Length: 622
Image (cartoon, rainbow, N blue to C red; front, side, top):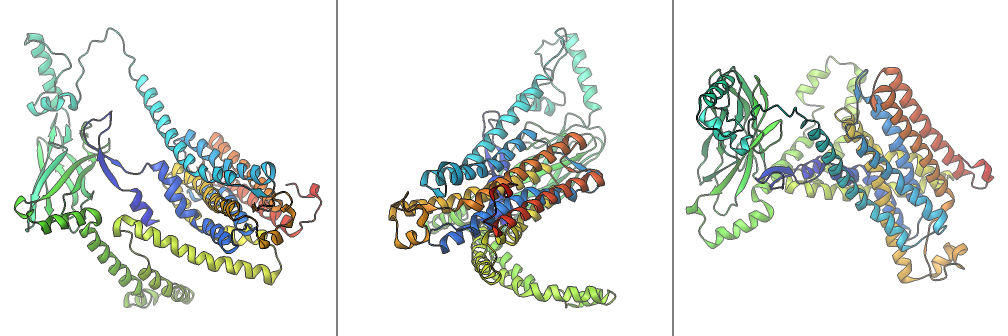
């Protein structure tokens, strides 16, 4: 997950219609990131189970993959939601801020499974054609697009309603208004007087207004601002120390302070610039202060890079300049570092610059150093070092035994994966993400083989193993990620659960079913296919992807019923308790217990159905 966080945290600077000057924005929309990369990271195990199972079956669909997907969705919707509700300390409550966005997400977490039920039971029972599989697969980009559009729509409506609530003023109120800093107010602040909204001649009344504004400024804590949004510097073969001036305008009353720190854009900390952080203080009457930054030496052929100086957490009554780059809680200055003109000559320098633009040579050096440190820390066994022995001397024997046992079990795997998995800092996190997906796929091959062996040895059904052991095991990443997010943000927690639920079915079943349907439509029926599916040979003599709908339809119908009940419980919690997560202990415990009971009901019902396929139909209804 660290690689996904680095990928989605990438920033860029661009212009928009509302803000014509360059401002810093995230390359990834937060909602789209939750429904794509974050959901893929947490639902990767169950997706891999379905893909590996389909590949091992030579394009046929078995009960293991689809039932694992649905069982994992039930675990996410019920057990993971219960864990997130109980994770909040009593009597704290976490409330979803974007309620309408959660409604959209909940609808898309149920609709793909409803479509799955329609495919295998109504449109073409026991058969999945290319169009049906393609529609299921296309629901994934549709979900991301709809979530993005809904977020923009709801945000614009909220902003419009807030604006409409602030424009109503008495018609006779002719009090002067201060222009924004972007409309010229900053020039007035530099002159020492807050400008008024009206342009008047130099009269006695205007002089009185100006005197009142000056007295108001003297009693104000002021506005913290930079002189400009971007500052370009040239650096050569030697280290460059630069001073960034921070201004306090519009008032100098009282002591004011703010925190500052640097963050990277295209520059690499420790290689292009030295990271700086601290607190900047203005005493009473002080109008400016300096922050010292260090630009590290440049090599011939290095590209132009950028990093930012960020001001935040202002105290003392001052505010940050709202017309410059940044949001309401922080202010940004972008520092652009260029190579000295005397070092840019030569074909070799231009070739190195092209390579540096593609792969970031300093980024590769940082990734190499991080990889070495990752391996060193993994091989350093902290359980048996001198500090660990000193701490463990006074501990109980059972604690020491548990510590040694867990270290012995995890140590070989920790060393192995420290070597095989690149650090998240390398190349923006993409190598770590791709290698992690490949490792999950390899482990899934072993898990599927073990599941098949367990079915053979115990005589149980694939559907029973899928909705119990496989569903629970493959849902652990979602449980850990959602529970950690619940402590910080209810929106991120619930969207994580719903995004993982929808991602697993659209990609985990949509992709193998679409590929399998295309395979049989192109290659036609074979002798192995006719032997495996004799009941559909008469209706589909040219071959088709056969999906047994008996247990799967029952599984999906049971999941949809319990998922709707879970969403109802969460909605009632908002009405009765004031929030979806947390609350008083008894309320929190009863809600979590109800959701876990629904999951147990789902599991027992599907296991009974799978182990007793010949039971009367009236006894198989949930």
